[in-house]
Length: 68
Image 1 (cartoon, rainbow, N blue to C red):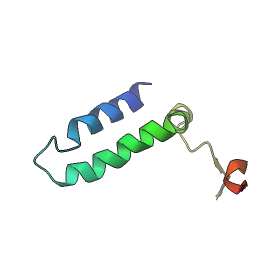
Image 2 (tube, helix red, strand yellow; image 1 turned 180 degrees about the horizontal axis):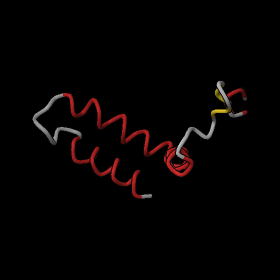
Image 3 (tube, one colour; image 1 turned 90 degrees about the vertical axis):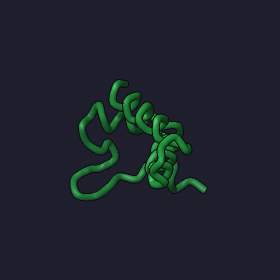
Image 4 (cartoon, rainbow, N blue to C red; image 1 turned 120 degrees about the vertical axis):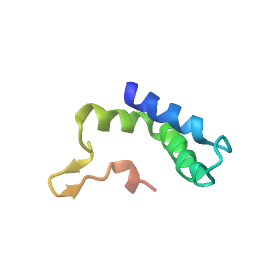
């Protein structure tokens, strides 16, 4: 998906230690981790144009979050 690829490309260009701004790592590293671990969920957000887990005014929590 174009949007996620662009987000990942921008983050890779900033971190780690690729800019003179010390704050770039603080933005890029969590972004890269999010894309790595939650790419499918990010794609759903982009495709739908909204949060796929939100129903009305409440957020729907997937059942796996409750499994222990």
